[in-house]
Length: 397
Image (cartoon, rainbow, N blue to C red):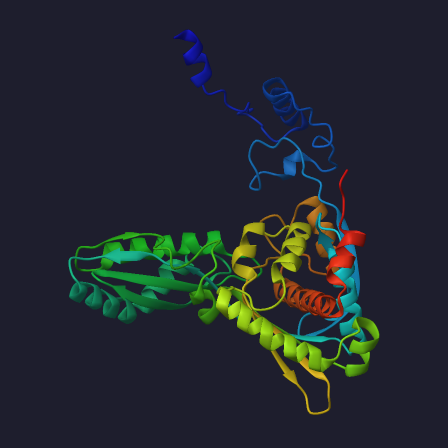
């Protein structure tokens, strides 16, 4: 009986209630892990920044996961916010990835660069209000529309930069889903939107003349999940990267023709449609995950951000127009992990530190996605895909 109790006793990770963000506190946790598991966290213990900078980013800080960073570029970007040649940090453990993006960037730059445009920005929180029947829910929706300005005032009282843009409404049975849409400046804005919407909902609860109750998230805000609603309505930033690939440059660098690319686009489109893919290009998630890790983004947002639509044209002069639309790209240059030591250095490399730079970072992300899609697609058509991975991507140590 005593043995069973010992096995079922939970032994918590040690914490210092007075100041848990010190090298000494981290050392105690590593010693605890060694005692409990036998693992010696030698490399995990090697870091150069002050743990005192970490409150708000992590709990039970024990050490670091060191992900290799490679530099690709330069890529010439013709954005409204990102303009010029950029060297791009990519944090990854996948061999051939940096080399592939580097080739795509070279090709884009020799074709004059990639034009990038941020079309919209919105971050959501979507509460659901519950009623006795559908008519009561409908009446509530009308009241919300009539009282939009007062609801907006309540929401915006919680934030300096967040602005309530509009409230979408969706009816299901006796329930009313409200999807609050905010601009969030240079922050990703999920927490900002949640706090603002909570204040708005409490105002509604206090002022709506009939009885109701609500849950702060009815799940159509789709945090950390892909959804068709995001593709149609925008979450984060909607960004388009587009370029005209010249025939001679394609043949010289990638050994493919525009006609081959266009034929493959039809085949790939059919395959993606059959599979129900969230992204009908080659691999947006690779670029975004590597950039997100390097620059301190919330990596879980790749689940939403990687969705997108590739569109192409075979032009009358024989060149090839290629565009990527990312309708739910969630990035920040302020808040979250962007102020941490290595992440800030990578943002500095891109000229994207601090307020006023999130649109610029979004344009860079979209340009990198297009570069990677071009390189991988050309590798598939030219027969280089498998051989490149054999040469650069095999680590069996």
